[in-house]
Length: 483
Image 1 (cartoon, rainbow, N blue to C red):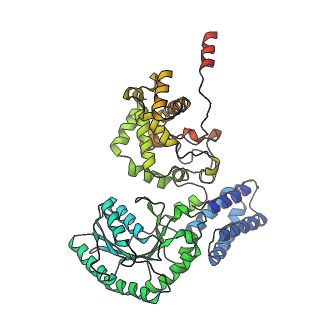
Image 2 (tube, rainbow, N blue to C red):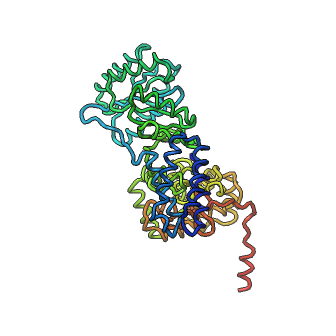
Image 3 (cartoon, one colour):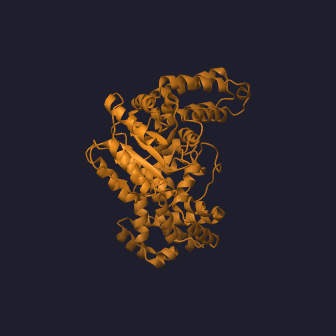
């Protein structure tokens, strides 16, 4: 997401790093480039004008003009202004103090309301809430069945409509949820055009009857300004309380995300980042601003890791590292944890300095699968004692995993490098074991680690293209003979 803006902002900031100080001339040049970048990203023209004026005024301040590091100063200004544009701070759900919290999902057809309702229910259940889903989308074929299937997958009860009356369904579903002791009720409504008077009146009637704590407008980020225009009309009729942006992972421009908060005055509360049921996040303006500027998002990365790492397992891993007992079984378990955290490219973008450089890295989406196959083709003894894997064993492992011998050797080389790194970083505990080192601020801002390598992660081969040449050992033997 935001690839086009990230690339343009990266170029602007790199250009400023070569200047001695910020002057009015280079401020105007940078501001002009930012304006073009935002307009090309389909950001609302009024939003662009306000943002540009704010950045210009801040950059011309006396304290900034005397700064000795223009690139860092301008990055800070952009980060602060982007954070303000996106809402300032995260807006959590407004919970009822008494009785269940009712969340009503509204939006255009095809925006992703049903899926978002399911994802949100799953997220809240993980946090200890007792969610209940009401399938009030009686117009779209199979919409009710879709929500029922999602509820079964998540272990969340779903109220099915008795007839084709959405108003009656909402009222009866609310009563049933209360009977079952639910503390969070999510009402999935049918998609509708904001110009359809009858359908909009139907939503107004449901809102008036059930009095929801939250009305969330679900918007497809990929339709850009159309989503913003629809949001304005929905807000006029329903006074919704927040926005859920879906398909943000496929939105390379980001215009709707950067516009909808300013145009409607309502916060973005959640974002959908994929098709999986756990691919939803609470929206944090400060973290998103950092991602847009290629500064990473370490906090979200840590949170994703904590969701997958058991504290007891993390402590066991830390103890193993301190005794230098990290083996390929541990390597495999860490690989599987990373796979659960989401797409590799998305995780790497959260590492500071990497977001704008993803295109420079040779990411092979199948590398983790091959690595997993190689380790699983080893015997338990070989996984515990990788040093025992000789030439004949490599042939057998390669044959069993459908790979080449040089790939087996490359994995062993990576394991040995990672083991050494993790031994040094054992004090980091679970995160050190997971990522192979490198905390925030370990490298110069915006730079890759020395040698152009990313910190090693299981199955990624140090982010460099895998060699297709066979690994040879005869040079080593010759050196031994000379000795």
